[in-house]
Amino acid sequence: MKRIFDLLIALVIIVFVLSWLLPILVLLILCDSKGPVFFVQKRVGRHARLFACYKLRTMVVNDQADHRPAAGDDARITPLGGWLRRSHLDELPQFFNVLLGSMSVVGPRPYMPADCRAFEKIVSDGEFRHRVRPGITGLAQSRGLHDGYCDREIVLQRYRCDAYYVLNAGILLDLRILGRTIVNLLPRPLRSSSSGSASSPSDRISVLHLEKRKAPMP
Image 1: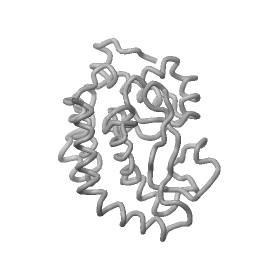
Image 2: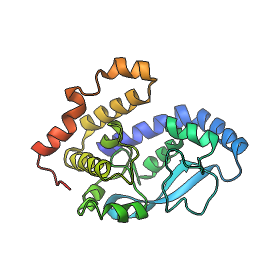
Image 3: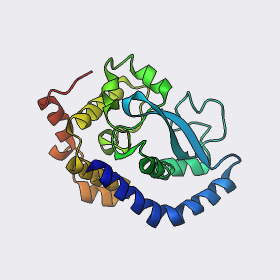
């Protein structure tokens, strides 16, 4: 059921959104900086197998892209790339990954091999998150845990969310995460009116349920 759900969403996005939006973004990237339009990077997927993850290029071409994650003020990020990252439009080509079966719409975000090796020093059983397909969005991302690759506490929080998702993956949870992700993409005034207070019980439910289910903790 989850695979059918993924295929339906991927096909809808590709046919009705990417068919017209992607050519526009391609032209903007070509006018913004020199280099390829797409950025293809090896990421760690299900069962810890490497796969080619597709993104729109947001940085100038450099030889550190596969080893050093981009920070918010990274000089490698192009002016257009900064906007693509903030709007998460650079992730849209990953719907082709969903169509190919290497990713899911919802799941733990896939990391670079270098990141996985670094996180193993913080989370000893981090490979637990590789039991499911990685996702375009996930529980951690829907709760605002996007950055902080060097922050130990954020790494642990992301792992708790990923572990909870692995234990509870299903269509209903996917719909909740997708809904939360869409709300987070709205302009701030609309977002606050749609989601309510940031400290509401609905925002804390994932961690509370994780502890009740006794998921593997870091």
